[in-house]
Length: 192
Image (cartoon, one colour):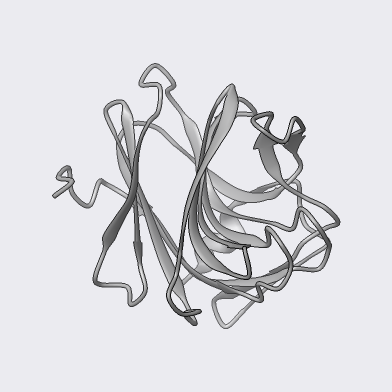
């Protein structure tokens, strides 16, 4: 059951979102993104984000798909304290294909991405916050998890917002569907 979608809060609510049969379908507004400065020089904080508050250590998992067609179309998850401290991860369309993408922002954004060999129907992302880190994992089947990134996240930041996110920096109307979002105690404290 994904009734959780209806209890979550929007930051930058999109022009369209609907829950049917426990699946959240969304469409993005025009030229939306989360990015702070690095390389491109612009500061954007108008991407769509649906979240719940969370303190302490936790794991959050989402399953989603998207109609990735335009450069930088993206869907996934985010942990966010404020406009200067957040991590987003998921699938991003760049260089003609889908990539697992992680952006870490501590004042300025950085970006890491690697191309998927094929375009999967559904991608699963897990973010685990432990101590001073966020461990990002992905799966193409929901059971075989691989590491995408281990990123520093300031431990003095208490409560954060954790949830799903999507953006379309070059267009509008990017469509994505989220079939799962769960948050709870850390799945594991081990990286390997």
